[in-house]
Image 1 (spheres, rainbow, N blue to C red):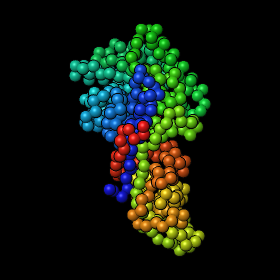
Image 2: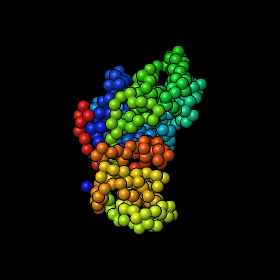
Image 3: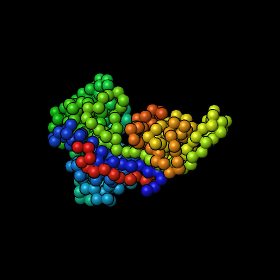
Image 4: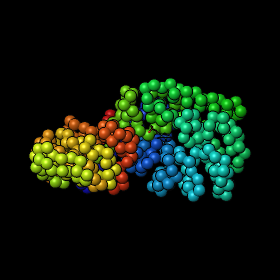
Length: 376
Ligand SMILES: Cc1ncc(COP(=O)(O)O)c(C=O)c1O
């Protein structure tokens, strides 16, 4: 067992997938979003768990992420959701990935590549209904689809958009975005363009707004058991899948007046028992947790004192009982009755739960546990 590792409970992920599947019903396709190494959980193991649960489509951000899954035997359709160009277009076609297109010159290159291979390239057209990020503006969609229809070797399998605030309690902007998307779809149908897979819902909309499910939903954060925001109550039961664990590397009582770590940002005001935790921002454990975060030792909280360094930091174990070298440290997850969630770490670090797990660097080995039916 390595000293520091992320433990990923595949049973929790399997449960979360089934919970989402039950919620959307059998007629809606679940696109399991596995980008950024499955939000830090490990793309291949999550993909295999998803496939075992009957998931038939996956979503990634970049062709290389899809190519990695293909190289490891994943055969289901994989949608690349980011802008793709240059060498990545060939990677995508080599690995039979579905691309998101919004630009004529990219569509023309794809058409030429697909023609040369003698196999059509399937694409999804991305529409910007109010995210202001990637996608065609609503008025641009119909003429674009008409130009695509004239390109040989290209077939539009899907059309989609993305919500900006579906995770919040106030759904008014989300309703507005959905209405815009429906107008785009209606205009396409009126012009005789029928696109088989229409999708817009992410986790927030999938869980809270069934009317937005359309043909498919793209779900990320919910599969990993994390709440989409603190504003809305859970509508389906989800279990967090990832824990971050390490071991105490040193225990000492420092005299009053001792300074701890770089920058001397913490000075003990009394003799203080402290433990060294061999984890740092080189693992993706944020430096902004310095003097703010806490870990669990002996099922109790031990606050971080001083700066989080690249590979280690110090905690005050005054309240943690009898602490010894090699005792388990839980940085994220449960220990006894106590727990630290990704949301709590996110609050300390002034970020979101997504970044807490996604930010775990490759240096942290992922260990997989759990059986698919553990949460039934
Ligand atoms: C285009 C797109 N669809 C779906 C998702 C999944 O979102 P969530 O993790 O909130 O379900 C993302 C993630 O950011 C995304 O960028």
